[in-house]
Image (tube, one colour):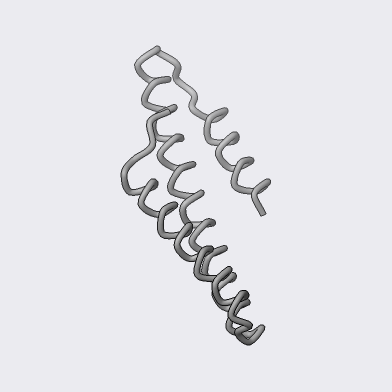
Length: 87
């Protein structure tokens, strides 16, 4: 699968957030502030996962249509399973 630049940029942003969290921990910042940033990073990862799964789903359904497959139900179920397992 080819990943979009948008997805890659989101991962880079999360990487920056994680580095910031580590820096906060090394500086002894308050727990509440660290947890707030961890929560923001988790949300960003969750949203990026949704983007990647939805992009993959679209690609799979389009490829299935090109191959003459009529029912994309299996691809949709796999995508939902990926999202559910990630929580």
